[in-house]
Length: 589
Image (cartoon, rainbow, N blue to C red; front, side):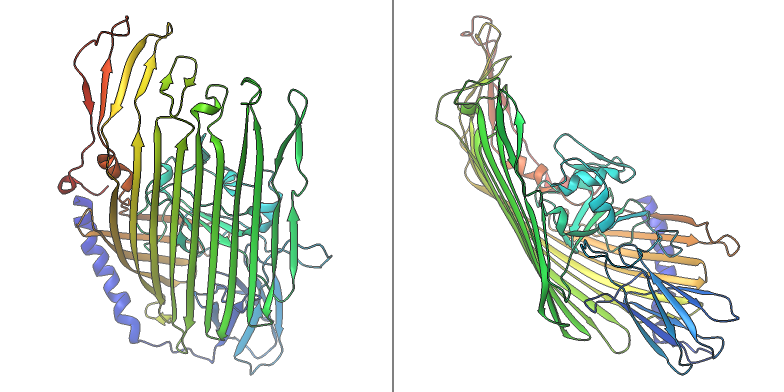
């Protein structure tokens, strides 16, 4: 808090001039040329690198803003050449022969998986002088060509980022953080579990167009997360119908004879709904696994697991200034003997079913003065349930489990995610300023119904060591509301220098304390060393409130009784374990 008190006044003083300049207007010496870069669906392409060659003049290098625009003042009247690049797109060249032209529109096409021969060149990655955060991006070529294990799970590609580690459960840890401390988004919406905070939704690897990872100096628009950001962006159709199929041939393996292993086909289909106005994209993945455990008895040694996901997206250009996009991601998982292994026989597993879905809608509107309003809403919902096989007493021995699993549970969780951002028109005041302000409001809910049977822990000689019993628990629920607002400026006082100050405010229903997060970062590219970039930043980052920790206080009471070696005589009084939370004592981290 001492750091917050000392940093906040400085940040406010720094941000105040950025708000005062909003009425000031640029006064160029000559009529400028406005270069607008859009993709094949007429959507703006921000952050594209624009190189302009004018005969007899020094080359000019610009970067498009949030509206896909870059403004340039010609030094002469001769024709000029423009080259536009951005990772994940094919590079494009354009020539302008009319000295009186003041607008130039360039289409930058996304890299695609294509079967026909085309003469194109991908944008060459290099140092981006306007990239402040520590960002790494993988586009279609990396997603397709990197030979990562089990390619049906896009999470297995992420460890190829520097500083990213994957644990045994498949969860991702960025820069040494916990999995729940990383913000995972899909097309701008949070896809983490509303309760545990880990990456829980799956999407077909063939449906992902690019993945951005930011580990430090990321802006205030990314709220309460301390471990970084992993952002997935999915594909969209164009004016051509495209179809792709992957891994549609089943696999077999040799274990006690030739056995069926798995069938994991993936399909994508995209194209126009109305040429030049509306498009669609569908990415489907299916998985059927025949799990065989040779150490188990015949007839009780298999588990037939099925899993699938489907992403359906549309984009409609209602007007040239208004773009509406929507999506529906659906996940399904079914495992009759979940957790089957050589130490867990069929009777001790559970029948597990998980269903999740995420419908979302986003509207982007650009105004005549250059402002852009981007807003969206999405609802992510999980239904997870498991039940034991039979009602035999559950026993844990030093070698394996026996009997029917002790717990039967059904839980539902949901997050309503709404966000909006307003990008103000670029202004000139001691340099160029791009001001952005936004809000986000989430409602999180969780409920669970659970019943538990006693658990017996046995010694090597099969005598009773401990017995755990559980008091009945009524169905319970927990809710939270999170709200945040931010303002951020990108100030370019001169070519090769960029400063990004920002201030964020957060509040939630559980902590009930205002949290202010001032941040500032800068990047400098020396004029004589174009291949060198210096970056620095400092800021306050808070973590979101973990419902998983709080719901443990509602999960009931466990009573443990320990027994002497005879397995009958209690070794002492019954021990009781319970979890409590003191909401008034909770503090932000």
